[in-house]
Length: 118
View 1 (cartoon, rainbow, N blue to C red):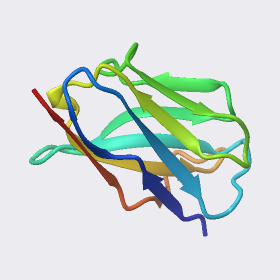
View 2 (cartoon, helix red, strand yellow):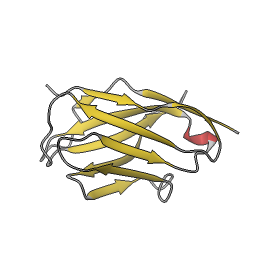
View 3 (cartoon, rainbow, N blue to C red):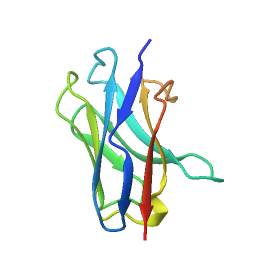
View 4 (cartoon, rainbow, N blue to C red):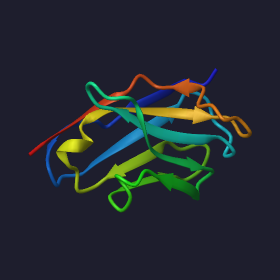
């Protein structure tokens, strides 16, 4: 059972940066996909970014060019560097993991709050 712990959330002004971390309780193979999702009040959870291994990454259009997901190797956390934050980025951010060959993100963290004020 993989457990994921997020950290790095907080309250910032628009234009600021934050870096979120996702640390698995167990070493996850590099073939695992680690993703970030977010859920704003009154809205459905939405995809933000994911990375497979340390190089294959994808982003939602709303964050492309502002957010960067990274991972050095299977032993290190997965980071989400968020620059030029906007009030619409306010949400609870969740880290999730998906096994190679699976369509489902089966493992989820508890979430970390990001609040961006204008």
